[in-house]
Image (cartoon, rainbow, N blue to C red; front, side, top):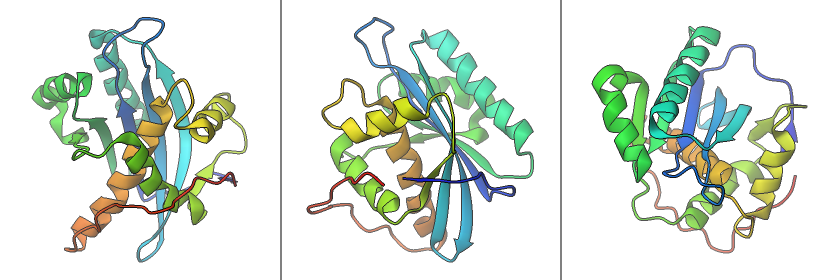
Length: 196
């Protein structure tokens, strides 16, 4: 993973949520990663991770946090298209239904189409391996984020992993759909995640 300055004029903002159902000490967190996307050339993109956080939240607090995060980044980047992604499973499904009633155009449910989290992350690894995932030079969450990705799938938590895979693969597949082409089925063979 490369460390670099953030772009001044991003082409897209992605807020990606991996939500959790329970708030017990042994349960997963609700994790959020926020990305700025710069389109450099046709089919060439850089993904800048600008914020990552995770918390254990009850549903009403989670819904408020999702809305507040989307509002904050719409204010920070008012001229940049934005989408908030929420995995369409478990607690995410209920959240999507609730948000659709009031703020539907900003939020999108993402289906995993039967893929497990390891397959999804391996698919996202090609974006890392090309050097197109860029991290800030410093952030209070950076060590925790990198450690979780580097320990996957053997780490205690994988919330940032799921949020990251969702963001990177959604934008990649969205570009294919916008161009009228179908994304290739994701079936990595022998892919590994390498520390950069």
